[in-house]
Image (tube, rainbow, N blue to C red; front, side, top):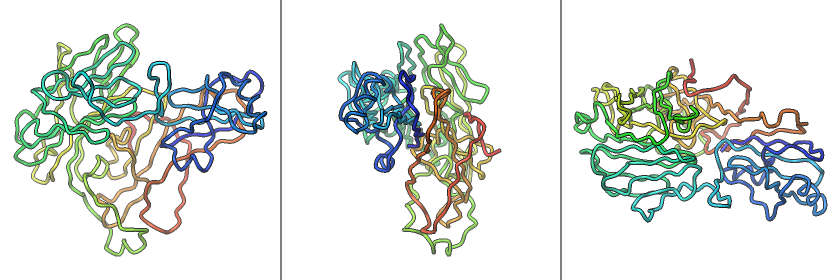
Length: 404
């Protein structure tokens, strides 16, 4: 998980906000926040204790879902701003985000600790998913009774919700992704897939389409966005054109990963999914692209999302040269994404990808910044040869950002 780490000069009475600079040990495990052995309520007390003990001390009043601040023995503050939430309030205490699904006492399925209340169906009648925040709730119903799900980590799989069609719900720190998995050409002919109709219930919310082709659930009183969904997309399992040769493998650092199921940016066939909120506000209609769903060149399975989440100041996306007009907002639910040009013969389609991250820094306005560090973890490399990675400041990103 990318993060921004800064060292700040800390005069007495420094304003609160921010997060701790990554040392080499924590940078390797950036998915989990550093856990201090003890902390102090305010910055002044924490700075005094850090000077006395010679050890960093967390400023607990500056802790948030996606930020830490530590007082340093030299009198500075080190701040870390995470791209995604790393903790959440459970009662009166902070707990690390844990998206592993467990069964609830009311026959539902829920992640252990996330920033919104997220509950998936445990099977049978009732909502497919309920998403709640600050007294506002958004829920969707599958058009039919759901089977009992199979749980694996953060994902609940409902097998054969239609013949040879599975439904997958995956929890995230601040929302969830749904995937309708169409496994065969015969399944794709089901008329119910031509326009998926989900029951919609919004308590205290108004749900509408956005200009970019996504969805927004706004507070009926204040008008603020509580939940949102980028433009839904669908893709098949085709590989797309290749330009490389078998000799491309020569300098690989290790055997390439097995292809497995492709993400949206790895498929040879990708298209947006049409969205429409019913006139009565009680139905969400998803219209898959017919050519991708059941075209002659379609390779199964076919995957149809969308994903819902709470809007945040931080964000990330990928721009694909091959899919130059298609947004890949928040990696379309993937946990990581490729960077640079992949011309190896196992890469399909061959593509050049750029990654973009938005990390809020307005809280540091007026502060004296002693140093700054951007940390991102490289999960796999195709080549043993040394390659440089460049970090550039760009204009802002949005759910409609593409290569074009």
